[in-house]
Structure formats: structure tokens, C-alpha cells
Amino acid sequence: LSKQIIGLVPGTGKQSKGIALRLGKAGFNVLIGSRKEEKAKKIAAELNDMIGKDCYQGFSNEQIVKKSDIVFLVVPPEYLENTLMTLNPFFKKRAIIVDVNVPLKFEEGICYYIEDENYKSASELIQAKVPEFVSVVGAFKTISAAKLNNLSRPLDVDVFLTSDNEEAINTLIEILSKIEGLRVLNAGPLIFSRTTEQMTALVININKLNKLKHASFKVMTARGKKN
Ligand SMILES: NC(=O)c1ccc[n+]([C@@H]2O[C@H](COP(=O)([O-])OP(=O)(O)OC[C@H]3O[C@@H](n4cnc5c(N)ncnc54)[C@H](OP(=O)(O)O)[C@@H]3O)[C@@H](O)[C@H]2O)c1
Image 1 (cartoon, rainbow, N blue to C red):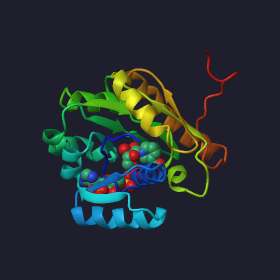
Image 2: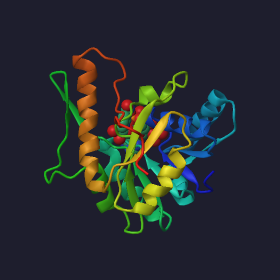
Image 3: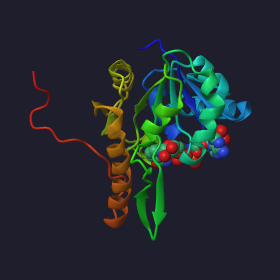
């Protein structure tokens, strides 16, 4: 297993707990962050109980960023800018941010992707706001918290990785491939987070309009991988 330190900022929300559980089950140690250290420690203890291993430890978000080589950024979109302003001074050199953010809004029961005025994705906006020695990888945008948290069911889903740093993509492929039932796909440069973010709104509407439960994405292939 990778020796890189993995932390979640925060590790206390719906999506981040799901990611933490899947990483813990795959054998990784995971640092759980929160604005409040006590809350992080409480959730880490709960997650340890849930999977019956001591693989989670709780710290403040600031401590997580100081310690981690790979920081999953799992903050709701409206708090992202402030969170980055607070945490930016503490990123390690060559840290990787795994960006899970999807800016969405609901109007008359339909889910819409909130378009940036320059059509930039959340991932691109984050990359522009962090120190230049930090690389952003978009991931898990299309996979719901409900699916990640339901440990009684195999994941059976694809995760799409987007980044302008090939080495960061390869690091994430190595780590995430250990999660059972998750196929990890390189989906190209960070600009393609525009697509994965839009796909999330699409799948939410597909679920709702067709009365489906947990619809998700899996790319069809004819004969597996080319040689
Ligand atoms: N839910 C999904 O199915 C899903 C799917 C794909 C992507 N995502 C993405 O995942 C991210 C998190 O979504 P979520 O559904 O997990 O959110 P959530 O459960 O509502 O909240 C996540 C965490 O945000 C922190 N938070 C609350 N207010 C904050 C503030 N003012 N400043 C900084 N942090 C604050 C809290 O952590 P502390 O109180 O511990 O600091 C909370 O535990 C979003 O970017 C979302 O787009 C979610």
C-alpha cells in the first residue's frame, strides 16, 4: 500500500465519510478532519467502530493539511473559497488535492449544474486558487454518498479522474484501485471536470425523473483493454 498520508477535509460529512469508509476497508489509514478537532476525533472513533479496525484518526482541518500528501477536499461548494483561504498556507510541497466538489442547484425539482461565468469547473477554480506546487485531481464527483456509505453492497461503479498532472493521476490510480468494486479511469485533463460535474446533475435528474435508485456511471467496453 502507498506510504503517502491521506487526509480528508473535512472527514465528517456524508460524502467524506463514504470515501473514508471505502479507503479504510481497502487497508489505508485515513486522517479525518473537521473545523473542530473534537468532532473529528469523535467521527474517527465512530468510523473505526464501523469497520472494526483502528485506521482513522481525527485532527483539525489545518493539521490534516499540514500532515497529508493527499488531501481530499470535501467541503460544500459555498464554503470552499473561505476554507482554501484558511488552509492554503499549510499545504505540503507537491501535495495532491482530490476535489470532489459539484456546484448544484435545484429549481422546480430539477437539478442544475451551477455554471461559472467562464464555464470553468470547480476543479479548475480550485487549481487556480491553491499554491502552484499543489496539483488538483477531480474524482468521486459522479458517485453518491449513499452508494459510498452502503458497505453492504459492492460499489460496482467507475470513478473518473481528471488532472493536468499525470503523476498525480497515477498516484490516485494506484490508491483508488485498491477499493473493491471501483474501476478507476483516467478521464484526461482538469478541463474535463466540467463534464464530470455536469454528469452529476444529469444522473440526479435521471434518478428522479425515472424513479430509479442509485443510478451511476459505468463505461461500457467491447473487449476490455487493448494490448
Ligand atoms: N453528498 C453526495 O452525494 C455528493 C456526491 C458527489 C459530490 N459531493 C460533494 O461533496 C462535498 C461535500 O458534500 P456533502 O454532501 O458530504 O456535504 P455535508 O455532509 O453537508 O457537509 C460536509 C461538511 O462540511 C463542513 N462544513 C459545514 N459548514 C462549513 C463551513 N461554514 N465551512 C467549512 N466547512 C463546513 C462540515 O464539517 P465540520 O463541521 O466537521 O467542519 C460538514 O461535515 C460537496 O462539495 C459536494 O458537492 C457530494
